[in-house]
Image (cartoon, rainbow, N blue to C red):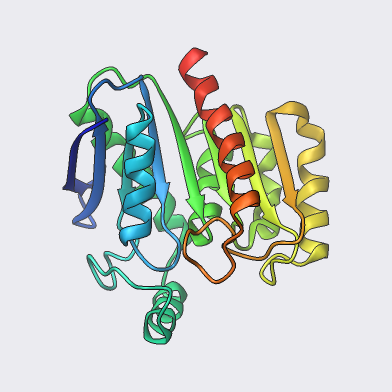
Length: 239
């Protein structure tokens, strides 16, 4: 059961860039693991907040930083509308993934400062956020990184060898943003890491297959992916 749900203010470690908001969901009985929930290109909207609430209901402290704060603070877009999709694409073009990694790490630090007893952490990202989750993992800012149909992952696979924790990538077989050659490059880069890193190709589904209510939502694949995510997160609790 979620005991607290609120938007909090996060200030960067150096304080130079100003403050931004993050959605924080705290369970009644935290299990010692924090999950950074990283947005699709639609902002920290109802879908991302529901995902954070779901993690909190399962015992995890969840925090979802507003990665658009430098462009349009607090914006929440509806992926079901043409206008929402158009705005999201334009905002995404202005996103800097390096800044997003820093913002996500700052949001995690803010969550730790507000909730005692957090000893491990994970990043779970979707679409653009999937790439951020991957980078947080391979740069060892979290104990585990989980990406759902992360975009442009194949372009940053050179950092995979730095991974010390765990990594789980959910790849959509028919994702137009991750074609077969990109999928092959990802698998090849992760192969030397053994059981520390796993890339699962979900057959017959496209990008955003796990977004409930979306045009490409596939309940069977989403349920399978979410179960694997749950297993990895649970391993952090018991580790």
